[in-house]
Image 1 (cartoon, rainbow over the protein chains, first blue to last red):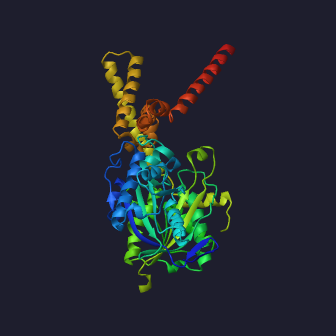
Image 2: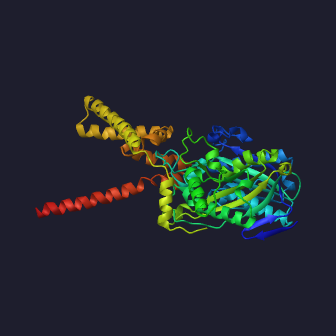
Image 3: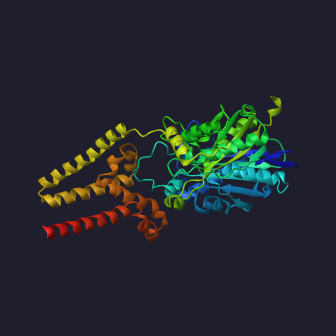
Length: 340
Length: 149
């Protein structure tokens, strides 16, 4: 298997394949426009657990179960699980993997974890270091809220730029070869910090990183945006999306086919999510629930997917630090691309 | 990518960010905040007519509102109202009670000492610290002014 690195982008001559995918979600997601795209939805966000943290691990567990069922695989055939979440020290993933006897790499890329996982998995596969890898990411509104903001029952008003952490998880099974959606290229992001300190405006903090990665991908690949059915970002929300388009425009790239998972997963008019959804589970579940099935079916032929992360902590924000952003990109191609 | 100065990006962000709706927010705050105060006044009149002394009645009103806020918080109603009411539910004494009860509920799973006990004042604590400090400074100023006169 050959691959090469041009600029910041890895190109795979024999691209690793996404063989299967699964998405699970919580209550608010079950009321959103993508409700029919999830494999499992939970009306009760506790998932029958005592704590929100355990509930998030349960989400991941159900997601992996669905993935194994759909791909007709067992964990015995999986070389590595690459997983991440938003909890301190990535505990949701660690506690999920406690119950699975498989080699585990914990990833922390904040909300960029899903494409970070797919990118690392694709690189390992393309390098011949594994045959089968699961990439997994999750977030839980209640676990994130109590860690990063205020207690759930605290009566506060959300600002119009704030975003709503998605309760959901997405998992994909990547293989060295086979049939399925191909991971043609990966651009790992660079940290970009435009000095945004407003913790309730994450979209603004992440937009520069997304712009940087997109610009680098197009420079490295020589492709143009029109060659794709969509350029999807993870959770920039309304505000971040607008800023992304402006930043790209300033750098001479105009894209007409940008979509953001954060504004797709909820009904922006009625669900009171302010600027849109966020969290690792946002891009993970939209990718695994909607975009990958559409690529698999050939409804979409070729897309760019970027999960976007805000790399601050509660401590760094209190110390007055600005919010660094990151965005990792994967180029995904439908198995039916040749039929275009 | 071209680098932007903090000011340039701040300006772009400001343009892209939707504004709060001050009129709508003020009306909600006025309506709900006023309603909470009205409940307080109705309770005061009830306590007075039940024969309580004036200052005892006021204390009883505060206690009752705190209790009601605690119950509403525990039932998950208070934050639903606060989403619309904003300062209307934040400013009255019920907001303070909510700020104490909500972390107490939230961090119950981390134990009675390290969870409930330690985290109960995580929001209200600074208000108490600086409230007490401000009242002491006020007291000192008042004391010396009286001496001088």
